[in-house]
Length: 417
Ligand SMILES: *[C@@H]1O[C@H](CO)[C@@H](O)[C@H](O)[C@H]1NC(C)=O
Ligand SMILES: *[C@@H]1O[C@H](CO)[C@@H](O)[C@H](O)[C@H]1NC(C)=O
Ligand SMILES: *[C@@H]1O[C@H](CO)[C@@H](O)[C@H](O)[C@H]1NC(C)=O
Ligand SMILES: *[C@@H]1O[C@H](CO)[C@@H](O)[C@H](O)[C@H]1NC(C)=O
Image (cartoon, rainbow, N blue to C red; front, side, top):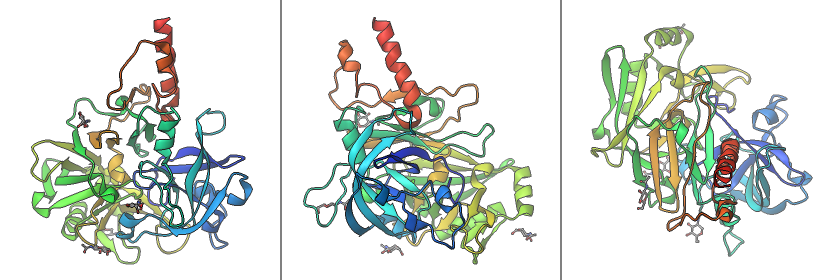
């Protein structure tokens, strides 16, 4: 899904009767974002609603409680030129498609979006409550609601974006209340950091080095001296970096910035050349610019040759172009690492302890697709041998992980019996 590269979306149902929606994972929003019919006009192609992950029709939901029009909480994204309004309200949300038997939670804050700056909507993964100017009491977040009703053991999540270009194609994975160990490369170094005190840039990480490797000659695209502290933000696809770093990317890849589309386009000729030389970009990330402990996220060329489509691709509707997902950040408060990094990085965040971990992702082969869900417990959690403790919140991993989690619970029951 998406107009800026193929990304995995996740299945959610909203309203009564439930309406289907395909949403991205949002590490930044406090409410569900979901495109509404105003998001597709008569100038858009007929399949606009389908392409945007389906449109949510508030008028068709008997449980929709409208709160009004507010600006989206895009403090971070606005620096990148992305913003919009949301038609805010409350409605019930069910995880998964009909028949998946995912949990339903009512009274979730939902922002109906029309802006095309965010082509698909998102599932809110921050636990911070949604504020409305006319409401004294903020509303509990999605993760807080799921924890309070026992669906998940803690306010935490694990996410990797998947690798669509890979053969076999690898889907993204989103776990609520834990993470999937099977998607983390156990042989590689990972880093765990405290969540940033600035709630809009919580997943701040130091970019110690960016290396371009083609054949035997590694080339430096960024170093500690570039002073890049970037926020990992899955509301966006690409990476926003300093101008000199983008220039070095362009030179290394043999491409130029296209003023018409505002993108670093890769034409067919250059694509063939790059496919032959098959370069990769290694992002060395750590807690500080000189921290000895760091993790290397390696992005092969195929993960960086993304497909831009309208409306992300300016110009004639229906056209497509290949591009390198880097953008010049307006200043040093806007450095951002989007979903492109998460194709090869696994991130899990523990809001109970306020820390997060970035690890090289393991792409499961077709032969080994089994999830290994690790629940994150609340601090002070005590394991008991009473079977009643295995209910509800004890083991959970929802959305993609649901099947594995149920298998896990069943196995434990069987073993104890
Ligand atoms: C950084 O750029 C953004 C977008 O242009 C702007 O809103 C913000 O004020 C700038 N911040 C600083 C510290 O210059
Ligand atoms: C919500 O409101 C509180 C109190 O006014 C404020 O401190 C907090 O930053 C707001 N949160 C968001 C996400 O806007
Ligand atoms: C998160 O923080 C807690 C408490 O400070 C610590 O015990 C734990 O090891 C940290 N987790 C990771 C993955 O670093
Ligand atoms: C493709 O891009 C390369 C590098 O920017 C350029 O030298 C070449 O002329 C372009 N080819 C075409 C057909 O536009």
